[in-house]
Image 1 (tube, rainbow, N blue to C red):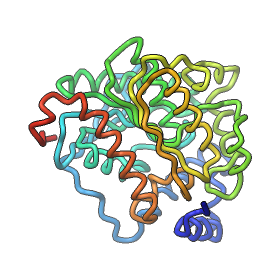
Image 2: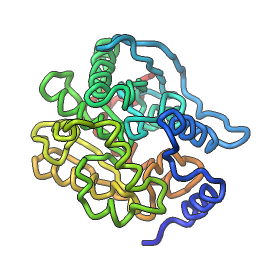
Image 3: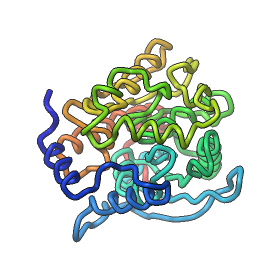
Image 4: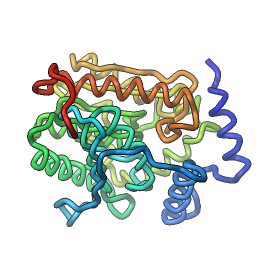
Length: 317
């Protein structure tokens, strides 16, 4: 189908404003630009989605304390989710993804632990994944009476998939993983990377730059990053959401099929008319709101299947 008309207008507005491309002259300039763009999306008079409580703190990590932001849902259902933000493993932070984490907390009914993992190129693979595992271990320790899940968008979804692979071997046990338009193919060989490589927010050149920062010196061959060559047998059930006009569309589609072929329960949600990063446009694009709701409902369903006493109704967050 055609690109969603609201996204078409939005992309035109960003282009006219000089907000694209995402990548600027240096890593520092790119980070600042992405942060400014993320905050500007919220508009004048923006009011964050209410949650029961928000707490900023640090948790122990392999190279020192890791900042996290903890969201308690308005109406909890006995789950805790470790959330990993997108941004090509190079950009993004707790603030850029604050609205998304609020939505996840309330829609899933879960405590959400958003992780400010170390970024490349200063900290290439596997440092962000190591931080993600440390945050998951902390979440499991502190919220051990809850059903555990992991979630992320874009590069964060790739990290979430890597976490699910490691957790299969090391623990803790995960009830589900939510992968929003993940990058799974460092070779960038699938058709959508070319078909949608220009004009739809994220570009092929962006992805080449991100991989160059994150996976130098052959790191891209690690199955935790080269996910299309990973043994996914026995990993946690997954929700994989993709977008029609995303360079990474086929990455997500292929990973969903790989999970299915390994007999891993998977809900695959294509995104007709949508672009990469659509969850970041909640409240601005109706189709993004609708598909995000579908993905979060499916994820809540995975976690709810394992929640003790779930049939008795709501549990406070």
